[in-house]
Length: 192
Image (cartoon, rainbow, N blue to C red; front, side, top):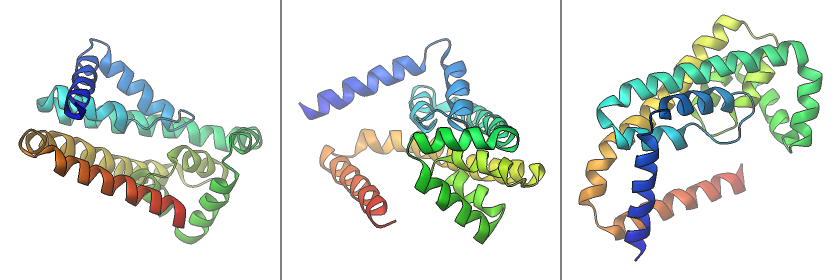
């Protein structure tokens, strides 16, 4: 039963990923997530790679470039409208996250953008704060390209190669792997 539900959901996502406007959706989600959108582009990228594994490189490139372009918009908003952006972010519950971002910048400087680009922390906070802190735009773009590119290459490769293993592995293995990932996420959130 569980396997049927998973397979049905997977088929739905793959069909949606084959939609004629799917690449535009990927572009929009990737760019807007770097500024305001709460859903990471990985959620759109993975099903698209699953639907068309041969095009994984194109999808990764589009996701990376769109995310960095959105990051530049976030940078500009931080540079010119930071006070208004802070009010918006604080009202959305990001006050502690803003303090964390400032601490990361104090410790690592532009390297914080690279780390944030790869990690699961909200990238939008780093794009906006980078503009506010007047981080050099060139350094910001290079760090964002490396961090976001590495993350999306990893998602693309994991999806592309994972399809083979998914079809061969028993359901109990996938339940164990999924449980481990969820458990690690809960522990990370609890102890950070």
